[in-house]
Amino acid sequence: MRKFALVFLVVMVPMASLAASGSGVELKSMEVRLNDTRSLQNGAKLFVNYCLSCHSAEFMRYGRMAEDLEMPVQLVEQNMIFSDAKIGDPMTATMPADKAAEWFGVAPPDLSLTGRLRGPDWLYNYLISFYVDESTVSGWNNIVFENVAMPHVLTELQGRQRAVFRTEPSEDGTEHKVFDRFEMETEGTMSAEEFDHAMRDLTNFLVYMGEPAKLDRIRYGMFVMLFLIVMFVFAYMLKREYWKDVDVSH
Image (cartoon, rainbow, N blue to C red; front, side, top):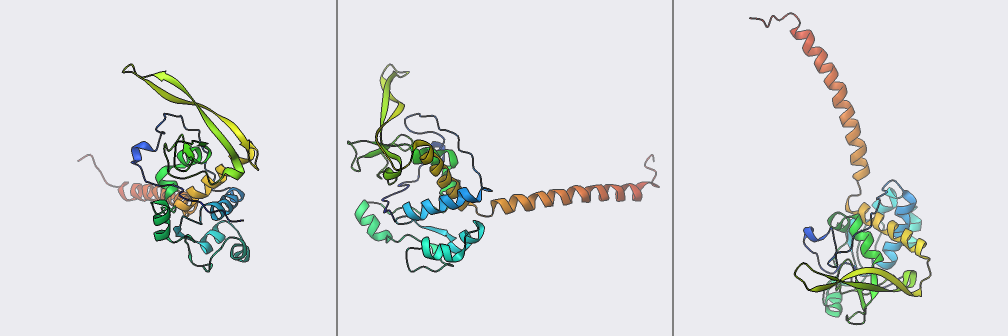
């Protein structure tokens, strides 16, 4: 069943802010596994069901995704395309951008390159760090992206959690809140371990979309380096053959 997300990443922030959140929370490490086809397939399923309603990925085509992730074209057409798009079309949002901007105050950004811009650690921690906050318009907040203007569209999977903050003194003598932990308010359809695994898969897919040819580039790069090493050996041997009768003492 398709879920309508509001805004996945609302505004782009400077690159310097991507390594940490506004609350100073330490980001958990996310291991990218671009050679894990099953992980990428699950991430693609989550993406089309929870993100693609509002967000496009116009640099990615359904057919390219199907080929790279070893998914049958018929399966993609029947279960992952929810509009009149064809298998060779880009992955565009079903919600018109002008309507989204009118309803939510901002047009949801394209997510094609989000994995490269944000980085896997930031994305993964963002996805798992929504918490209930009645002071915001949406009723949600995020410890990684403070005051983000989107609700938690994965609530039914994760459940509702609240953030617990502690007060610590600042260098100037004032006090500030620091994130301490999450406390679950209601359970979701997934266990904590299952949701964590799902968000790692979704992050994996977003990173893949940012550079689908990365594995090919690395593989070809290894062949190129091997070729250069072999060529160096032959070039060195040829150089010695040419110069063996040359007297360089004069």
